[in-house]
Image (cartoon, rainbow, N blue to C red; front, side):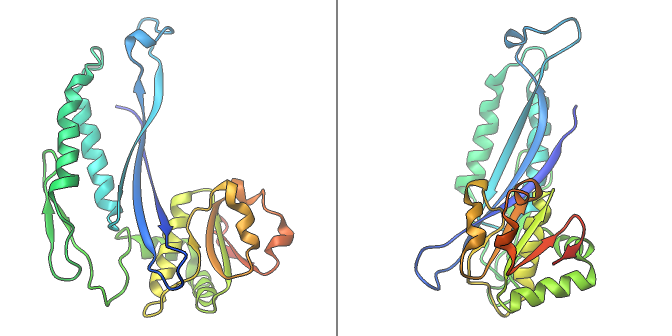
Length: 250
């Protein structure tokens, strides 16, 4: 019974071997506030309670961000029904752990372009998982990803960044919203099909790796705007910088 928010991310990695396959891990996070246990709430006065921030994260090697968000929402609704606000009886969570373990261990991922999988999760309709054929357009993490990326970039901006990708430029994307960075990066790397991006691809660059923008090779990097401000502008002379918040490119 409080405000919740969703965000998602992509972690990309490959080996040091040239031409090695890029492996992606997709994650969805729901963030919310929960009342602190009564014994830990020394500030409680009458109806006033201490609320603490919490988050639940699901990850998968399948591009199913929309499904994971729906699963997280269903999981939170189930938690509310199992745990009394006053008793804070967390022993009832064992059943939730069992449900999550069953999804992770029991159900197999679909065969790309051939088999669809139907996965039950708690109560409600089953979730349908499917993957496009391996020889087609690469899968996108969210059904509205292309539409959302077009709205962020505009026609001119989308053409510009696609040209930068196809000419293997150094590309740095930044925004206040990390989910927007990841979405645009995923869309533009998919839309260059039948080509594929085989150079460094880090949708969200950790602050401890900001010096990577000075690398002497092409890349696609994404950084939150508050970290982008820490980068030396002299290091960006040969970099295509995309500001998603202003829908501009330089």
